[in-house]
Every structure is written in C-alpha cells, then in structure tokens.
Image 1 (tube, rainbow over the protein chains, first blue to last red):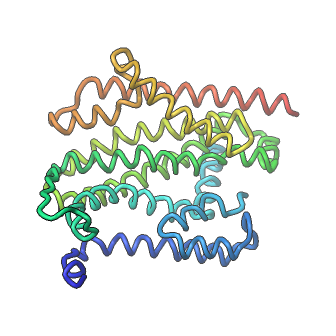
Image 2: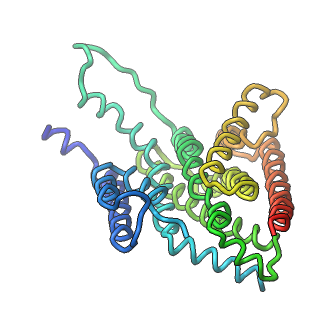
Image 3: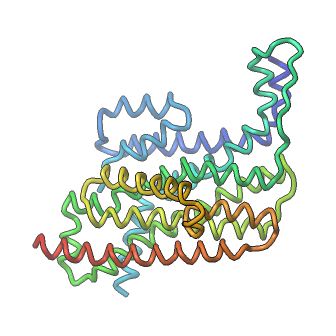
Length: 67
Length: 259
C-alpha cells in the first residue's frame, strides 16, 4: 500500500481533487443560501457530501429551484 | 440595444444560478478523466490484483492524438448529456412559470428573445469547452507527449461547432414544449438518433454533423484540415441557422396563439 501511495504522481492527481473540492464547496454554499430546494434539504446535503463528484452536479441540475 | 439588454439579463441569470462556476469545472473533469485513467491503467490493474501468476498484460501505448480523442469521446457522451440538461429549462421553464408572458408582453422581438438565450448558452459552452480542452492539453503534454497549441485551437473550433448544434437543438425543442424534462429527453433522443442514422448510412451521410469528431481525428493525423471537415462544419452551421429560424417562428405562432 505504501508503495502505491508513493508511486502516484501528485502533480497529476491534485488538480482533480481540488476541482472536486471546489464543486463540493460551491454546492454547499448554494444549498445553505437557498430557501427551498426540490425535495428535502437534508437529503441534498447528504447527496452532495457523500456521492463523489456526481453529487454536486446532481444538486446543480435537479436540486435548485428554477427561476 | 434591446438585444444586448436581453443578452445581459441571460448572462446575469447564468451567473446567479452558478452555471458559470460549476459547468466549466464539470467539463474540465469530464475532459481530463479518460486520459488520466488510461495513463494509470497498468498501475490500477496491478493494485486491484486478481491476475493469475505470471500473466502478462499488454496495454497499448497511447499517442497524444489518441489521448485528445479520448477527451472528445467523453465530451460527446457525458458532456452532451450535461449540456442538454443545463439548457433544458432555458425557455421551457419560463413558459411554465409565466415569466415569458412578462417579457414578451413588452415590445420585445421574438428573434431577439431566442437569439439572446442562444447566445448566452453559446458563450458559456465555448468558454467551458476551451477551458476543458486546455486542461486536457496540459495533461497530455505531461503524460503522453507533445501536442501543439495550434492543433488544440483547431480541435476546439471544430468541436465547438458540434456542441453549438446540440444547444440549438435544445433551444428548438424549448420553443415547442414547456416541460423541461421532455425537452431534455427529446434533445438527447435526437442526438442519439442522428448518430445511429449516421452510422447506418455512413456512406451517404458523409457530411453529417455527427462525423465532426471523426474528421477532427483525420485532421490531427494528417496535419491538415480535410475538405470533408469544412463541408461538415458548413452543414452543421446551416442546421444551426435553420433551427434558430424555425424556433423564432414557432414561438411567435405559439405565443400569439395563446394570448
């Protein structure tokens, strides 16, 4: 395991993690600010935090109230 | 004057609903996913294990051109899906909520209304496409080998025309229906149907818009722009113009009829 850990080129992987983190933070800020979402808010919170990458995208596409 | 006011309103709205923040990031992720995972595939297989003792796995070495085609492949599937989903409500949801009545009750021309909507999506998608391909280009230069900036710009330009057709199809269905889900379903269905038709009748439909990425591949391999690519792009641009024209007429008929 140690060996695999050190064999990863972090310059390559780090941007991926950063982008994913930014998406997660934007989604959470938006969730905190909006009064209403499609469906319960706590459920969207769980989706954003626990589903990797796809969670925030799902929230932006389907969770926000249009208009 | 009127057009720029409408356009600014659309841009502001896309900024407020955070499309300008998350959409480019998602496109970047989609574009760089495949080149990176393919590069690390041998290590992933090794660490997952399960291979019998002494098994030798021959994995192909990818060239930079193959790597950029991987990015385009992902953008053509996941990217198109997300584009369809972000554009599904652009007019349809305004019809549903009645906002369209508030806007069109003023002396706003229908053509301005449609093209302002379209242009705001156009700017968003081209920006996101360019950023995502620049990131992909960065990784390809690190992992696979050199790939010139000029080629990257050519790829962005021709592929952008294809994505523009996708948003135009979505705008067209937006003018017809007022359920965002139906718009998304029909737009995605149309894109899939077009690609199936192009595959079946590939010898007749040589200028089908779905062939753009195939010709981009040829362009990258030969190093010059094939005439088919120019013809296909012109056909695609023509389709975009026609669809916008029909959307304007449809929305004019429908909205005048409903009042």
